[in-house]
Image (cartoon, chains in turn brown, purple):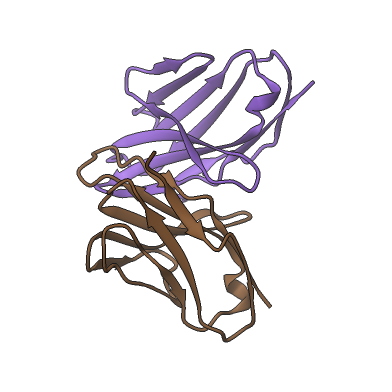
Length: 114
Length: 109
């Protein structure tokens, strides 16, 4: 069965360190998204990609970067982790051309920045 | 005004009760609408799409009111397993969706 997997599931890091969260999907979807979820804010879009070598900023992109070198993967990098980036991170994918844009989510990565 | 607004709840209802949630959206050009379900500390999962004519899936009924710019979710005969947070999702533009902050439902034995 097609799926979308995130790793690690839990991560503790220190302020100032670079951290990369992995996202891998086997749906063969062109669209991939990264969200963070915090109490009171719901899901907020960090970055997204519509295909290989395409990346776009979402509403909360400062301090984050992504790259898309193949269809399956969209790693999220925190250049210099800050305590404000402690959150739960979800990766999602959807099919390009799907007018409804139904998104399928990974299980999430819980990141703590100390 | 937020693009998508939901009552955070919690809605505490007894088993077997009927419960309804509303969600309002601000952009009249919004194209498609969904309800997602999210269990505690887990990923959101699509519950159902919402069509203009209304649609039903077992005990769940979704309605769209474009004139008043809201969607609703009705759950009949609530089960303990329905306890979760329900996210309203609106597709505002091509490939761009916005999530509400969710409504928490707790079904009580």
